[in-house]
Each structure stands twice: as structure tokens, then as C-alpha cells.
Image 1 (tube, one colour):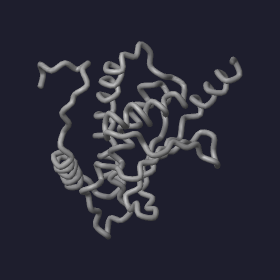
Image 2 (tube, one colour):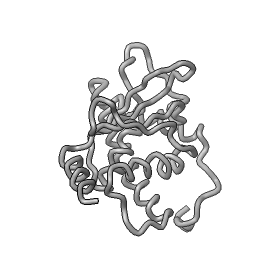
Image 3 (cartoon, one colour):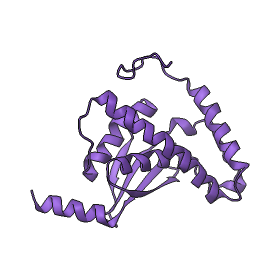
Image 4 (cartoon, helix red, strand yellow):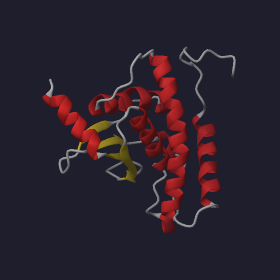
Length: 185
């Protein structure tokens, strides 16, 4: 594994079953070391953040990108396409801007593959295992100098019980920078 070329796209993929087993073990390990659901989501977010930092570096290396995106929309498109394809073998289902607030964006995945084999007990119905994904996304937006508060929410829809929405609320200074850059065009 260490001798493989990091630039070359790998043709062999990690089995979804193997990843699901590893992910469920991460959840169980974390669950035994926390007191509540928010702590568990926070722990999963931390693990996702560490993964996200490495995913960003690898994506930049593979894409042969000389510069990193620093504009909000370009960063979100990068996550929605390149990162999602790299992690989940598909593009995210939608990228939307909130109608209520200019600093909020949503990335929607109707069938997140990492949640396929995770069942949440009824007493933990507010638990969102997608917190791992939100940690990955948070790391990438921070690497792109667009810090944001990132949360994940399971929003079931017709025929899509695992539909997950990643909500990004960008910091005020990021949005001010965006306005200055737009005015300078």
C-alpha cells in the first residue's frame, strides 16, 4: 500500500461492507466514551475532520491543482463534485443556497452509502450518523479558507429514509470577503 502511486487514480475500491464495518466500529467505540447524543455526534465530527484534512490533500494532489479554492461557491462545487466522487463514487445529489439566509448552503445526499448499514435505535432518534460527513466537509472548507459551522441532518423524504442534508453556515468574515470580491469584479 505504501509503495502505490498517490497520483494515479486507484481502480480497486474499498468494499462498502468493509467500510461499513469499520464505520460501525467507530460509532460503537465513540458511543462507549460519551455521555449523550450531542457528544457522540461531536466525536464523529472530530474523526471526520481528521479524515477530511487528508482527503483534501489527496484530492489536491490527484487533481493537480496548483491553487486551492478560496471562493465559497467554487469551494462548494469542489466538495459537491470532486470530493464526493472521491469518497462515495458519485456526485452529491444537490447543492443549494438557503432561501432564508445568504450565509447558509446545503449539500444533499439522498442515499449516503456510509449510512446504508447503520441502524439508529428509537431512543437515539435524534442521532445523525452523518456527523462524520459533516466533519469531513468542515475540514475541507477550512482548508479552503472558508471556515463554516457544518452540521448534518437526516431529512427523510418519499422513498429516501436516509436522505442527509449537510448544512454549512459560513462565518461572517467569509461572507464579507465574498461581498468585497464581488464588488471588485
